Amino acid sequence: MRTLFKIFFRTLRLVLMPFMLLWARFGAPKGVVRSAEVQQAVDASCSKLALYHFPTCPFCIKVRHEMARLSLPIVLRNAQHDPKFRAELEQAGGKIQTPCLRIVDVQGEVKWMYESETIKLYLQQQFA
Image 1 (cartoon, rainbow, N blue to C red):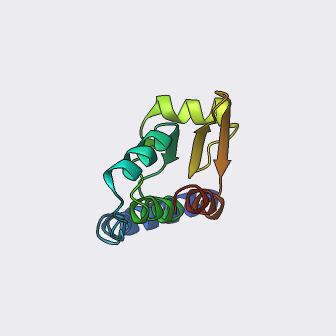
Image 2: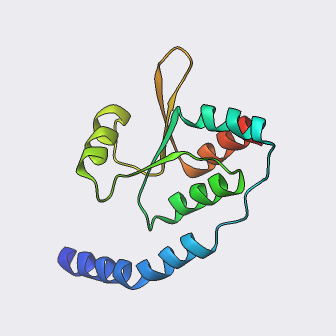
């Protein structure tokens, strides 16, 4: 029975994956337009951030859409297909769960933020 569930969900994922990728690619909103000076400050702030994600995860897609809406050049780290990023997420973050935003504060301390709604709220507070 357990094998049957694995096969079912693997097949479901394979069927839905192209649609999720299309949604991620063409469903992204237009970004905000800022002056060059303000965008440069935003870019500097975003250099301290990295998003660990799975390309077809719907929660990751929501966060990436918010990043696009806010015109944030946050580094994307594919934890699904890159073993280095997956291990980094598990060891430093504590669990393999995406989306996860890695934040380096001004003191150099690293904070790992999980949950798409929490990440979206953080990005809105920092950059909206």
